[in-house]
Length: 309
Image 1 (cartoon, rainbow, N blue to C red):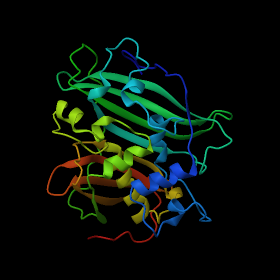
Image 2: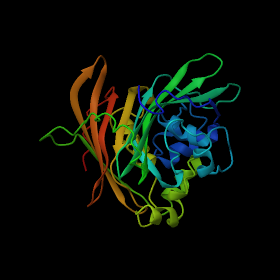
Image 3: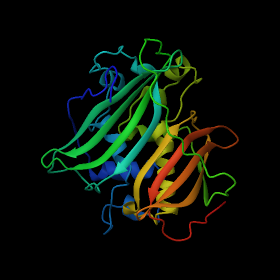
């Protein structure tokens, strides 16, 4: 790590969750009634859907709504401009699942520990802030998940910072038919429900921020599509067992609007790292652009995974 802001560590943020929070998240990312272990707290295999930790840096330890803009600007990264959180979107994200979460944080103290990996000036389009976020049991120091992600601050570049490294690409295998294709119909209510997990960015609820950013109105959380795609992989390839996914990541390529149908295509590569197979995926708006590119996961594949439409 080098360059302005790199290595800066935010103060640890207490985070907490209840069984109800876990159930809400599973419902909003697409878990179905044949996956009761994600949706019913008395199921003997009741478990947290694996990507749930991505919501905790937004939710923190609150049970009520949070002022998104105030929280985003509360602590300034030294040596870089003060970016406007009213014009920010997700760039890309990789999540590593290190230990299964308990279904509630009750009786334990968890923290989100974040540090800046880099701040990059992309010129007129904007700036990128790349951050590593660890979900940690504060009493033992054990890391349960690690997320490496970037935020793109629209139109906030040209401040003389480094351009940053080229990102590694994970395109779909050329000439290979997807092993799984699923469709997911969003509705105008989709982002309004998903935000109740704790991500209260007004961009996903009120048209005004999206109009100012050039989106024409409300767009759905990038992490909604991200988590929906994760559900497709866990359900269709992993037998709905959270233990069968080790890593999951993608680049946020274009916005999804409420009411869009999103189509997830998944390819097995056959390439393994130990017991984990590399999976590639891509998410498109039906009849439109790719919204999640560079999709890659490491999984244990269960069954034939041949559920094409």
